[in-house]
Image (cartoon, rainbow, N blue to C red; front, side):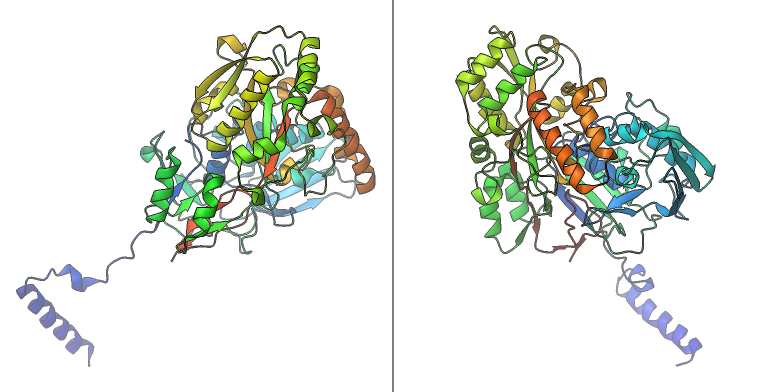
Length: 533
């Protein structure tokens, strides 16, 4: 048929359809593909949007969606280039030169530059423990040109790339104007260069967070692997839903109203595994470490004997029965500050944690000067696992003769309150519970809650410069055998200083609908590479 006859035939058919009352638009083009939306129930309400200002898991995961990183870890826990295209190291190991990948843009359309990255690193290093350590070795961090920056060290340091590629609380890259915000002040503009854009207008704290695919994101060509490789957004829209009632969330997942359940209570796992329309996936090969964190600033826990008393009230299996329930998902005992199952596993010094002894706890508290004052324990009512751990601690403290003041609140409120250095009876606290895990926890220099650098430490402000010197000694040593010996000295000292108490180690799987494919075993929930079929 000639083009002219095709045109006349089309006009005739179009006219007939109009006569029949059919909309002309139906013949102009096939309907556009429906927008794909992934709906995920997340473990906490997102209230803090600055991933430098807090170590909260929910904010860190928000950061991975909208920001990108210079390096990312692969499944062997090796740092791989992410925003970096190429880099060189001088023969004396003192000068690192990094060149960025071409074509990267911020969500506002501006190009990513080396100046942006330098400013982002400097801000992150003011608060993040591993970055703080690297910064102490840095002579200068300079912009060479629009796509290149240079890191010059005062002396050789073996963990440069590991620091730039750490998994938890990494240095997320931001535009220079935002990254110049003081590290102790929260940012107010949320422009990244990652695979998703934060839709601020649709953010409803306490309810929903919305992200949409960044069309101009240029992923790496390598296959996605853990937190490295191509970050390909395969859904157009991502909705984070905060549903504090776990039964409601479970029902929504079973009914297909949501696609992804980020942290189902562990006693739900057996039920979820029996449903053929669902998948239960363990995304974290190392697992999760439970942390009981005392506030080192105020009595009695500014005295190491009071912190040692906490070791004697803990029986890990009791916590794991309450928090996890399913013995398949937890270890009966783990005394390793740097994760059981990791290369840095050690139980040196852990003897006080092995045997619960309330009489010994009372004695140590008395020696620390405790005389029955109220001990403020923050209880997060909307986090099932944390709430369960808190309840066990409250019971054990009372058995040790402690006057416990339980203050209930939601997790987001706890996150804000724990960052305050106010006295416990003036809006502060004595104890809270949290968790951490993955390859960062398994390293003395990267373990967030192990950082004992006083005012540079995380909330709770552990302060033991002797312990910190041992960690620095470990970071300088390249020989694995010598490192192991230093690590055992670190463990011994840690059980004297007690930056925190390990209340157990367990696995937290996720649950998704059967039609959700491409979930990466990245240690944390991430949402690139996922598609709905």
